[in-house]
Length: 341
Image 1 (tube, rainbow, N blue to C red):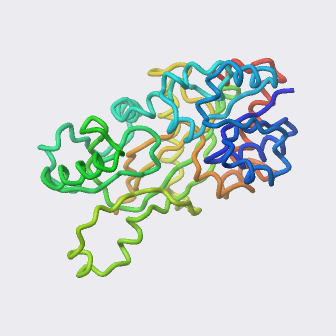
Image 2 (cartoon, rainbow, N blue to C red):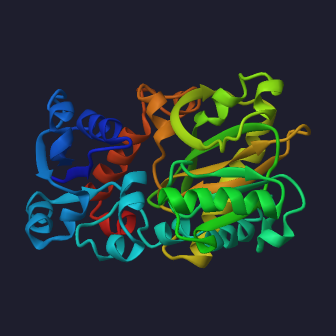
């Protein structure tokens, strides 16, 4: 029987609970420092304890994954802790397209794919000298918002960049990507594409809570102006969101264009869960500033299903369970190679 495996972080509980709900075996690669947390949950069949997640690159642990007939579910921690070369070297079958994770980790490739999908993308700024309006500086990879900052001039950018260098978060300008800041309502659109059915499913929407930019908003402007403080966008948690129904047709359109574009640019394309991330402006236009080419932590708020997955399934369907169902179906049809890389 196929075993669903993942790293002990991010959305591991949702993934493994969903696998158990679908009758599959579960395996967690767990850092020793978090063993006591994951021992609490009976739906985890096997814990593989490691000093670091990088240990799974060693032959000892790859043999364990192979022996247990695992399919490894990637999430943000995998991208944050490994280089794209290391991810691509993993021998165990990875659910989805491990090659597209390179495009997620590189801001320039990410922008190329979003534009190929004909999404509305805020203008990128190639040089700090060209900063003329409110701009957001972002680190490459799955940083969870940590080290992001707002700036409106080259002088202010240099001050904040130097602070990040001093704290060790970045080495220099090449570690930052500049993009014009669009104001509006943040929305993170969760999708699942099944290559087995050639069908796109819209699974839910979440809003992210970021520290300490949210805390800063509670401080009166008089006090803010007197502060010498660099705010950040470190994601702390997520909350559910429901869109106006009139927006849904455009949502499906964005997801379908993204799937088609990914097939053209990075074969075999965008298989499984992904997230288109952006902001609705005052006219209800969606500006896409990011995508995540795998399950996102915002799906954790829908472990019993979302308002949108309820429209598609008669049982509580989390994204983790949807992944497990796809693996189970592919195994029965002997098409596991169509949904893994």
